[in-house]
Length: 239
Image (cartoon, rainbow, N blue to C red; front, side, top):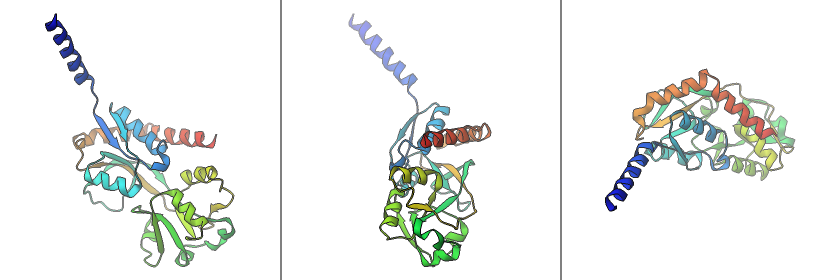
């Protein structure tokens, strides 16, 4: 009888090992723990038949975690060179976004051209990449913070004059904070769109699956799945 029990237990353990899925470790902003990036990651994990573990962190911390291999994958990363070091960019890019400047409503006209930024303190995300004309302006007074909410709070306190962020995520948060009538889009806006990539750590134990990840991303782009996820997300935000 004891032999049968041990045999059954061994079979159960073997079955658990066979059915165990690979774990995909990632991270998103703590402000949007269940936001669009988390939904992109959920889609990728399901297509790869993996379990997903998300540990929310500010952008700078999760970028460092990616480089160290503490997380495997990260979405929402722009590329400023062809260099591939600890961060490997997976092709193709999955979406294009344009950054937007926000100001207090009574200062809406004070930011009419890019030259006006030279007289302003600008709230930016630490380590985030924006666009060439912005990056090359060495005389800009940049105030780096970790979260979108911090940008909004600094603007309301008068410690910065404007901040730059995605319109799609900023407008819902302003509405939630009751500030949609006080913080508005500036008159001047950049025209450049950035390509955003899924990235994998060169130190990830899943690096050998790089080609398969790229197949999933390409299918998601070609089939319109990433677009569908994005549109559904913002429709739900507006309800």
